[in-house]
Image (cartoon, rainbow, N blue to C red; front, top):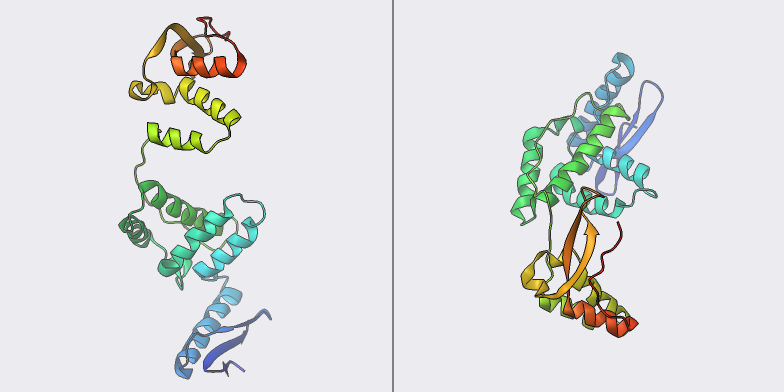
Length: 246
């Protein structure tokens, strides 16, 4: 039974030359179209079995195999699922061999047109590349993977808290954690990188921490009067100008 009908949809039933059975929906209500698809798939399977030609797998095949292998141990698997659902409109029904550089560039542009950042568009492209690389190197489904360029991203991603945001966070915390948060914000090397946020420091009072690039060099970071008051209220101590050991 090469093709048969379930409801209004036609299905394909093929037995390959090596005895493997393939049964799948033709996704059409037209018998002639289902028969054409059947004949095409049967010819492809014959070439795979008799001539050693690689089977031209679909993007859906790769997605299912990727999710099956990654599910349970990849921490970002839900992010993958989110991106893959979005990609279904662009790659659904495509053969892996049809995924080329122009198609990937159109996907990149489509993601950007939604207002996504370069970093988000790059994460989508990275997922596609990871799946294609695995299809080539581990699954033996592809001979080559298209080369494409990622979008430029800023080298550093810095997000400064405003006074209002910091106050809103502290207001939601219980008092013992609020005191810790105020002290952390007042003495943080990153937070105190902006003088307009840190304000003026207490004279003669410094917090010394090593530079990231060297354990032998130090830099002084002003300790605010506010951090001194927080420390005094929590521990009963007073601020001093002592330096921390390396």
